[in-house]
Image 1 (cartoon, rainbow over the protein chains, first blue to last red):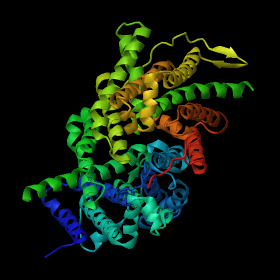
Image 2 (image 1 turned 90 degrees about the vertical axis):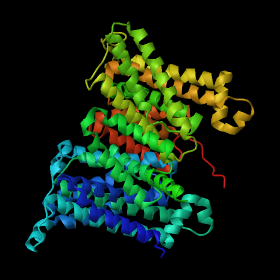
Image 3 (image 1 turned 45 degrees about the horizontal axis):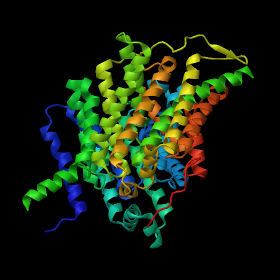
Image 4 (image 1 turned 180 degrees about the horizontal axis):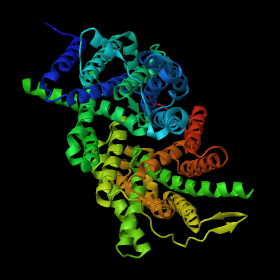
Length: 318
Length: 290
């Protein structure tokens, strides 16, 4: 029986998400798992933008910041339910990505890098400076989602860690499913074509500008949802979520794991989220090790961790 | 008027530092098509190593020389260990490698030098000079003079010496340069040494004004990168103009509009410039070969 790459990816994800808790020695690991899923959602967006369409963004944390602060601000100021606030954040991110993306996606390579970098810095600067609204660098509280209480009333009693683990896991599966569908759709094929060569794609009738913009908007929504989930889960948010280092983290997770495949990128998110947890014992060396890992993987495994591992495993089979 | 003059003075001083960092970006980019995000760490190392040597009892000029030489050596090592093995990698991978290098250097500096803020005495005292009702620190003149001397020196090097022309040839076409007998490997080494040295010099000159600590590099890298892109990546004139322009925009925004949003103004200007001139102010239009 042949299983399509899409079903295989989804199957692996579902099994991993469902079975991992068996190995958890304590409730704390649900929290780490949820954190991995939140990062993986944003990174799946980066796969669409960078892996499919070949465009760089050094400012996607800006959209995560918008999603996060929408969940913090909209319930207080507009009286929206946090879940609606999350949708509002995603909508704002989409509109903003559309407005910003139109001019800057004409740029290529490093120029696109500096333009997206500028966008991210502008967002994080607004979050840092508008103290009356956002609380400035000290951050602000985020209201409770309220869903866990509803589930409890319905007879499903989960700990806070378990609840967020499974909620973020479900959102991640949905996110991966959408991204995989996109990959095989005509739009996905056109995106991959323009990744190979914009000129060649244009000559066969691909609307390059429109498609790049689509990929940019979709990935912005992914980042925004990831930011919202992070804010709701922590019930507290600081402008760091929109900072430059968070943008770099997203891109690094994707490329480190293997930006060409959803599963690879999610693997990258898991590795880089776990790394600081493992290194807490040697907290002083955390940055040294992180820097070494980033350089080492890119030099020795340029395709990313997962594709390189898979190739090695398959090579031995044959 | 004195107010405007004061803002211009501070803008030119900051701009000179940005220009030096941007020149460092330009040299490496020309030799290897790599944008080196660790450039800001060279600035940090320049200031930090000078402080360490000076605190150990060495005279300031000697301390500065050692710092610049050591930083150049680190630049060369970075090229050999991290950049050359990844030759031909896509832009995203190169960005991650150089950011990885910058995180590595920052982590090492934190481990070796601690988290304190350091400084050393200004070269020509701290008595401000009065010009037209505004004041300027003698150290600012050192910074501005340093940027100008480095720019002129680079210009002479690239136009008047055989080695400099070899670097230019390599940046134009690596393969053709190899064919006429240019040692492109040496050109790469030289470019990293030069660029790291210039970054360290910026750190040495600026530290008495801006102070230094293990984590100042990132801000310098982002501003220098922005300045280089504003001017047009790969063009030394553009780097110089971009650096000073960025410094002036920041100082004028801080003075007249809002000091909190001074960085925002710089990036708004960059977005606007790139919108109308996608190759920066002095960049050449790139042509895709299909």
